[in-house]
Amino acid sequence: MLRAVKIRLYPNKRQEVEFNKLLGCYRFVYNHMLDYKMNAYKETKQNLAITDLSKHFHGELLQDENFSWLKEQNTKVMKQAIRQMMSAYDNFFNNHKGYPKFKSKKDAQTALFPLEAISRNNTFETRHITLTKSFKNIPFRCSKLYWNRLRNFHDAIRSATLTKTKSGKYELSVLVEFPNEAFVKFKQTGLLVGVDIGVKDFAVTSDGEVFENKHFNRANKKKMARLQQQLSRKKLDSNNRNKIRLKIAKLSEHIANQKEAYIHEVVNSLLFNYDTICIENLNVSGMMKNHHIANAVQEVGMYKFKSILEYKAFVNGKVVVEVGRFYPSSKLCHTCGYKYDNLRLSEREWKCPICGTKHDRDENAAINILSEGLRIIGSRTPELKPAENPTVDDRSSEPKKLWFCESGSENS
Image (cartoon, rainbow, N blue to C red; front, top):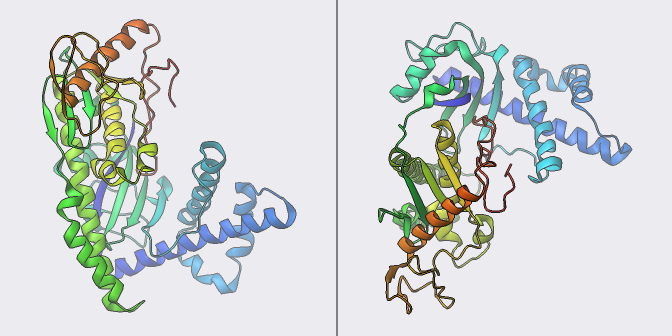
């Protein structure tokens, strides 16, 4: 199993300068090759392959005296920029991810180090890492768990991606091939649960457990608005404007880290207690287009929660069952099956006119999601099977959906 271990680097002043040069050259090669490929198609309708771009890189770009500074960098690293650009084209044609864009120095900067550009003498015992000759003994920090993984599996490193964040931090995602059993964390319990994801509460289970919505964005809204106001008053390209920009970037990273940590906390709690988890297949992208609820949906992080849950469940041999998004989980009485068609979003509780049962909207939905999930499992047991082992690293988008949903076709 390929898995990325993220560490934070603390380069000295000289190493920081070298990092910035490398990232700038990497960005230049990416943009130059993208422009070269686009112009070739416009002028001659020729779709250049990676071999054509490599010939141009070695035969023309590196030989041009105007770009002699490219020779200071490791060629194996620079060629990864070409491969990443071609991967962007593949994602555009095959996965409809959007046409490749030119990289900007104002965004997060990245550079990929292949295995050949990483020193094989790394043992990580002293919390230092060596990449190419220009980057020796760079100190780093990470959690004790990540440190132990790097020390135990340093011979299984496959690549590393250097990132300079918008806040100026240097991070390295080390891609390592681990045995599957290294990530088995949760024991089998034999229990099942339905989970309703919402905005009022982050998640409500069919057993009545409620995970509150922490509202990380809302808690920092005033501070963010004040910083944005200060940024708008600063002169363009001034040092004072850059200082405020860094403060905004650090606050944004802090909010994102808080949100992701809480999502992992909720996922771990569910997988610790249950083996089968039933959730709704929500149309998150469609919900984000509704300006009335888009901010609330983005604050909860529904898509990230679902992807993390599916991945961790797969690793630990547990099951995630998706219920169709059009299943009326909130409108059905879980006791008698009555459907309350006129249920409004503002109604958090309602009483069934047939059996008289009082329902909490979210808990009732979770119970119905569990019932529908069990029906799906029972009706399609021969087809319910795990997908292939997903590859997860810092460059992949999201792991594959792992289970058959209500439509009966496998998601990919």
